[in-house]
Length: 170
Image (cartoon, rainbow, N blue to C red; front, side, top):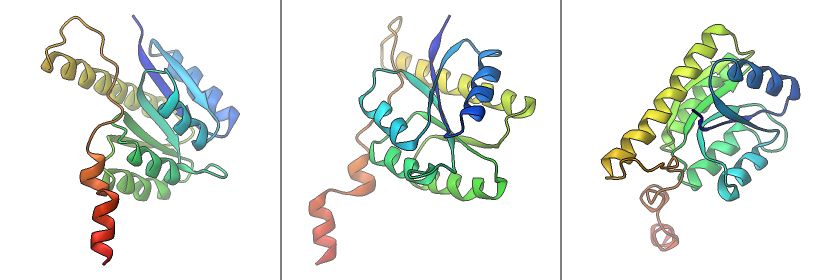
């Protein structure tokens, strides 16, 4: 049985192929890959894709992982997020930033993905899928398929409205 997709955001086609291949060998989900942060944000904003987990590379040209994190926060994305990087020292700062924005950060892994990372990513994916199922049952939608909630109403609480910003500035 297929669940919702895993979105891999990485500008390196070799890393995309490696990550996708390893994930496909272990989990029965569609793996969607994009090469830029802009593509990822556009896909999540406009696309019909049902994403339960996002694997986000930190270092990408033009629109990097930190910029994607900011955009996901603006969109009130609640999809599970895993931060990836070849530079392990960058992981804690981007992870902290994403959590500060209220994103559903499940963890961070260093690249290249190995068997230990893969096991952890699979566990995070299962956690994301189960949280969607729990939300579905809790809201009385038993037996109906519910897409992961990507966008909520928390945006105004976190960012305030334009009127709030002007009031604070004066």
